[in-house]
Length: 258
Image 1 (cartoon, helix red, strand yellow):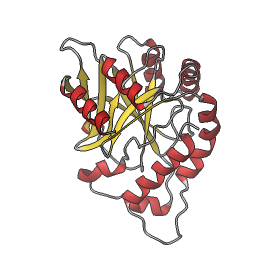
Image 2 (cartoon, helix red, strand yellow; image 1 turned 90 degrees about the vertical axis):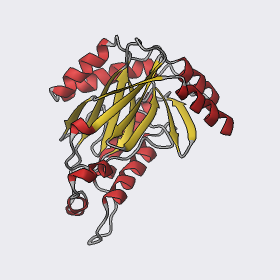
Image 3 (cartoon, helix red, strand yellow; image 1 turned 90 degrees about the horizontal axis):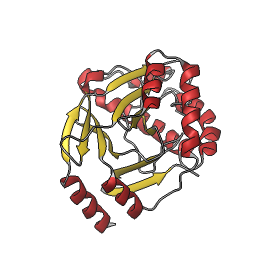
Image 4 (cartoon, helix red, strand yellow; image 1 turned 180 degrees about the vertical axis):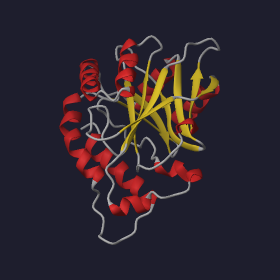
């Protein structure tokens, strides 16, 4: 594993960095196939992807039917993928023309996100407590092989949860601390259907290719209720950090590849 970490550091050191502000959209109400309430998703695609543009228009207009139709279409290509080892993932990362890190201010949410040949849209999920934040404080760092390399298309989508009284109390924090509302793409990579994501958490490279879109769909129906209504002791005050962790655990439990 130490060799993998060193290889990853060396790979990143060869890249040319540029910083951008991604488009950020917030959904509310009934869950779509894109992501469950109480979560966020980093969504990316190759520079030429027309399906990404179609999805972004549907998200912007909050057209749930169209969103579901596009996600279902994307699952067909994901179903052909196979799980890969960490070493294979590192090779794919090195071959990628560009990959992406996501931050909210100084809060790191995801690193080393990259697309896969034959798959239009890649998604990586993180927990979201709900509450106020400033979209312009999201930043993507693009790490490209070449200075004139076309950059991947990236957007961030969040789905506001229905909040209980305890949750509403927990998320009342100053705007300058709004990064606390967001979890990190976890040590296990979720699907529905995240194509190929490599991420470093606690210095460990984790890479997975989503294979079973059916499994993701099966667990998707359960996650909304669990994330919206975490099991909390009545009358016990929770912190925003606890709420983030509860939601992240629910995402990982219900949306990991099985």
